Each structure stands twice: as C-alpha cells, then as structure tokens.
Image (cartoon, rainbow, N blue to C red):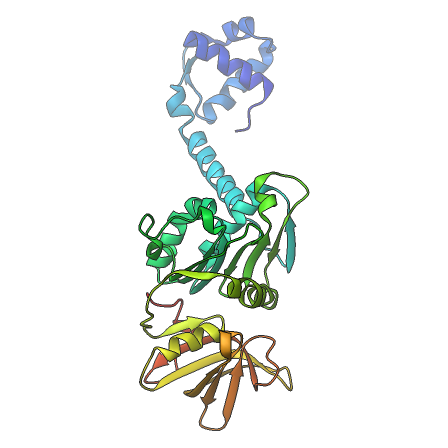
Amino acid sequence: MDFGEYETDAYLAVLRHGNLTAAEIAEQTAIPQPRVYDTVRNLATKGFVELRDSRPLEVLAVDPEEAFDDVQTTLDDLLGELERAYESPSRDAEAVSLVTSRQTIYRYLEDIISSAEYELVLSLTPALLDRLTETLMGKRDAGVTVELLLSPEADVADPDEYDYDQVATATRVRRGVTTPVVAIADGGYSLYTTRAALRSDGDDYGVVFDRSGLGYLLLSFLNTVVWPTSKALVERQVHPEFPRKYATVRRCVRDLRAADGPLYATVRGRRLVTGDYETISGEITDIGETTGQDTAAITLDTGEETLNIGGQVAALEDIEAHELTVARSSPPDADSVGRSTRD
C-alpha cells in the first residue's frame, strides 16, 4: 500500500469527519492548499475516498472495510507465504547444513517426515512422537513404511495405552538416554541431532543431510550401532503388497522373504567397477542376508546378464542400489510408483 505523508494525513482527516472540502482538509492538516487536490485525487484513484463533483469539491470517506479489502487479501496472501517459508526449511544445493535453533530442528523434522514418499526411519523421544503423531498418521495413511525407534524405554507408553500401528510399521525401544534423534526420508533427506539440542538453544546443534549418499551413512549408523541394541515393541506380520518402492536393499529383502510367486525389480544405482549410473530391470531369482540383517543382496536376471544387487557402499556385488521398485508379473516402471502401498 503506497501511501505518502500527505495522503495519510488527508485520509485520516476525512475518515475522522466523514466528509470535508479541500479547504477544510488544508485547515485540518499540514498539507499545502495547492497540494490538496492532487492528494485527494490520488486517494480516490486508490479507492479510499470518493470525490463529490460540487463547488467546493467535497471529499467523502469510503468504508475502511471496503477500502482495505484488497489490501487485506494481499496481506493475508503475504502472511501465508511467510508462514510457509517459516515452516518449510530451505533445501538448497548444500549437502550438509548445521542448525542450532530448537525451533528450526523441529521444522526440519516435520519437513523430512512430510517429504517421505515411501520410507521413513525415525529415532525419537516419546515427547517428539506426541508432537509428530498427526504428521506420522498422515504418512501411514498414504502408505509410507515407517520404522520407529523410541527411547528412553522407561518413558515409552505401553502398546495397550498407545496405538503404535497408527504411526509406524514397526516400533522398537532402546533403554538409554544417549540415543540420538534421527529422521531419514527415502534413504536420503535426513537429520541427526542430540537430545540436548532439543532442550535449549545452546551449543548443541543438528546436522541436516540433503544427499542420498550422506543419508545412507546415517542409515548405516542406525542399522549397525543403534538398532542392534534395541528391542521390538510392536512389529506386525508383514504381508507386502506390490508394486512397492524401497530406499534400502535390507528392507526390500525383508519383504521379499514374506512374499511368494515370481517378482520383478527395477533398480536405480551404479556399477561398482565403472561407477556408471544405470537403471536395470529383471526378475528376482535369489535373495541373501547375513545374520543380524547387517547386509543384504538381491540377484536379478535381466535376460542378458545376472547381477548381484547390494546396498549403498556395496563392496562385493555388481550394482550399488540407490532405489529399488518391486512388482509382480513384470518389471515395474519406477517413475509410476510414487510410494509404497499400505503394509
């Protein structure tokens, strides 16, 4: 709203009195008489006053609710944009970001969970779960697979008191208070922080990763260090439906063990020897997994070659998988499968 000083003075004077002549406006304000006519015409053009064609010229106030209607709409739109900018953290080209504000960490947690299309891995406190329950329920309703770890165990509600199925596919608990807070969406966009960073805006901070390779390192840390020292709280029998998309081979193999019949996969990844990125498709002919599910692999027959598919940072397989899509009857189009189906 572009109001000059003269326009502001003139508008307020007319608003207080209801209607004034040009001479009266000059008397009521510090506006020079020669400038009054230009000033009120500008106000009329903007819709804040009406000019009555009389002698002398009379200026009438317009109902402020009507006069400021467009301004209010514009302001509401602006506030909406600002609110969205506040709630959705910036995801620029930086691979790693450090965040120190507790509120910013909360916003990143919300953003990471909201961004997940098919897979979420979370390590939370019970208080954070309460804060994020509605968002997680929406993800489960959308078919996203959610693996949830809660700690400390002493603060975790019993399954008879809290319906964990509404927020997670599988829920585990860990005893200590040293467990970090972690959120990983689709094996990539992720956050790691300490509990101390959530208690105050002090020296502790959170680390945000916006690259799949870095997110996978965080996922590997959870799988090898944190997950083995936790225990199951709620874990439903898996009856996977396909097509389904995966960020990790380990979770894919877990579902394949529970499935029957011929299955096919489309894998996006890279050749270990050359580093070339490829998308390959074929029939799944074998699956393998080490004790403790630390590593897993899939054998894929493309019709031209048989390839062993490993996870990120694979060492022995032919392909390092970054994303897998599994379907029945024929190799799936990975782009047409936006998320996993409901467990």
